[in-house]
Every structure is written in structure tokens, then in C-alpha cells.
Length: 317
Ligand code: TXA
Ligand code: MG
Image (cartoon, rainbow, N blue to C red; front, side):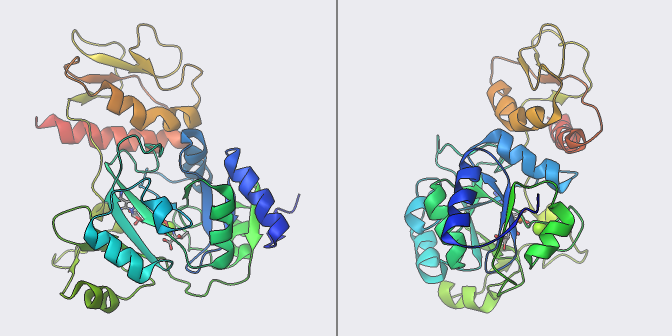
């Protein structure tokens, strides 16, 4: 089946239903085409990483129809309210603190206590978000390492066999990803330059803005600008059993597990459960978290990448 559909009220309604049922839908925004999934559905979000063939879990942007909806998932400080009022809808993504029990998948935030929110300016995209009535996690709709798509044809070439539907509304007006502004810390910081100019943000802030990585002599990759989630307790990979006091996070048919990422050994299911399990096991009840071996294939690579970072960052404790 040719999954490209011109964006009409009818195709938008079908796309909204597909998103609500956990399917992947590619859709245009004013910046680039996004690969969308229900941001509250762990499995749907895991499918995004699987389809993109990403070797790591980066946190994703949750797209919503308006600021009121965004405020049900994220904490808006007065400054965040001001920036949203000025630049939304538009090519600005705000990194904000997650509301506790906001219902967003932990995988959407890659385990962090923050979430990136954006209200796109594209009329069809906002209509889709409004009708779907759910936050939509959407990275750019390209395979990992390839260029961000600005037409439906680009998406079809890279992901045509991986999505339920591609909504087509012609080339993107901006053609650059959104600017990512982190308002979750003490000082606002641009984490990624994009479709909204730094000068516009500085005008609104009334002062110069910090640009993450800009003061360093060595260039950093965009991924390195992102903080990574790690449990506070020591984490041990490739464990065959738990040591006394440890929790055992299993994968596949492993005995005596405290929790199991996927008893069936399904890597998409394991990715969907990863951050929720780590959070659940990171309690004083356990001295550490032992994790069963995860195969280094498909989404297993991204899972192991994240576990390795967590193991390294807890080694010094
Ligand atoms: O224009 C865009 O932003 C497009 C369209 C589809 O909206 N989306 C997009 O998503 O570019 P993605 O996943 O390719 O990029 C998201 C960026 C990454 O640089 C990621 O590190 C950052 O936002 N990000 C997301 N959540 C974050 C968080 N909680 N903390 C820090 N950075 C975050
Ligand atoms: Mg991208």
C-alpha cells in the first residue's frame, strides 16, 4: 500500500485514529516532517526508535495543539509562559520539568525529569494534534544519521515501509528543526539552534542567552548536550543473577527476576519498559540493579547504550 495521503480533513481524521491506536504516522510541521507516535504509549514510542534505527535513546519532543494542553504535562514557570505566549505556535521547543504523574511515557523523556514541548505552527499538524487529543512524540522522520525530511517523498524513501501513514502537505516552510530552549534549569540555555533565531529569543528574554557547548573549544555533538538519565544506585550489566541486596532486571526467560523488561525476549517491549523499570527499581529497598544480558541487535543496541552510560555514571559512587 502507498502510505502517502494528501492532507485533508478525512486523512487527518484517519491519521488521528491511527495515532490513538499506537501506530506511527509521519506528518508535516513548519520545520521538518515528524515521525509521530502517542507520547503516552511506551510501546508506540519504542516503535519510533525501532523505525529510525537509532543506536541510542535521545529524548523526544512532545507535540501538542496549544499551550493549555502543554501545561497539563509540563510545569510552566512565568518565563516559560512568556516564551510560549510570544513564540507558540512556532519553531521553538521548550524543555520544561515534567509534571509528576503526567502520563507521558518515560521513554519520551528518555528517563529524564524534563520534557521537550512544542506547539507547531503548521495548520494541518495542529488540526491533527487537536483531533487526536493526545501528545505526539515526534523526532524528524528520517533514518538515524540521514538528513531531516522536508517533503513527504523524503519520508517515504527512508521510512515508507515502517509507518502506517504519511500525511503530505508539500515542502516544509522553515526546513530547519525547531530551536530547543531549556528553561528547566536556573539559566535559560539554547540546546539546539534551529528555526527560531537566537536574537529573537534574546529580545524576548531581554538579555543574552547561554548556548550549550558554545564556550567549549572542542565541538560537541548534539547528543552530548543532553543530560542522560541514570539511576542513583549502582547498575551492573550482563548479570546472570542478582547478588545479595540487588534487584534483578531480567530479559527473556530468566529465573528469580525482580522485574522483567520482556519475558518473551522482545526488544521493542524491552525498550518500552526500560526507563519505567529503572525508575521503579531505583529505591532504597535495593543496593543496586543487576541487568540480564540484552542482545546487541536492533533496539538492543540502544538499550545497551543507555545501560552502559548508567553503569559508567554510577561506577564512581
Ligand atoms: O523541528 C523539530 O523540532 C522536529 C519536528 C518534527 O517537530 N522534531 C525534532 O525532533 O527535531 P528530534 O527528536 O529530532 O530532536 C529533539 C531535540 C534533540 O536535540 C533532543 O536532544 C532535544 O530535542 N530534547 C528533547 N527532549 C529533551 C530534554 N528533556 N532535555 C534536553 N533536550 C531534549
Ligand atoms: Mg533529527
